[in-house]
Image (tube, rainbow, N blue to C red; front, side, top):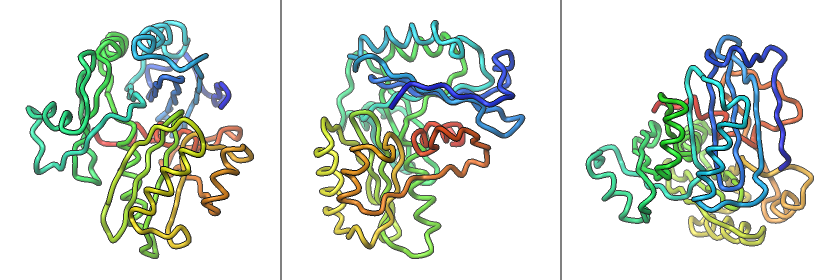
Length: 284
């Protein structure tokens, strides 16, 4: 995906203190959206690719320069939501959750590196807490820049959305949602009136992606022609990747925003940044 920055006519850099910023960082780039609550609209959307994928140490350095050099990230905002695209997270049902035990929960199936610290968010629809890790140096950078920043895991929107959409289906077929990031993707399944699973896979080429998707769907005994399948994230029409996916999943549906905010950017498909565009809508 190419770099871009789009904004509405009424957007003003002098009014950022009244705007909401949602910022998403990964080792391949960063994206953000700015919401103008006064006009109930998305005021701006930005996506910037790094020259190459970065190590964790380099990512901290890049985040520091990003906050200094990007004109709109050097401003102050009414509210700031921040997410790191990171596969390491774990869901804990609310009934079992004890915030004093979050390290124990997390390390049961994940590795916590020395340079990372744990955060958690409540996911209302799942009635569960999502525990996730962020490099502590990045946390420090963000808090120093935006003292009231809210740290969020990118899967929070994803899980809430899967359950909400599945519960509202007219015909109770299995519901599958796939969100594609750079080098990884998230897949979630709702079947038999229950949220069944969520998993994140790393992939190095497009064939790996197809294998993981089809294998996961097959494990839950779901027929492609008897399921709802929605895509979001970095998949664009009229690309080689799109046509490859289309060979195996003939009906590709892209998620559409239902935030109640105007999205007036004709050259940007809203499904590309679906999670980011919804980040501010969740209860944390």
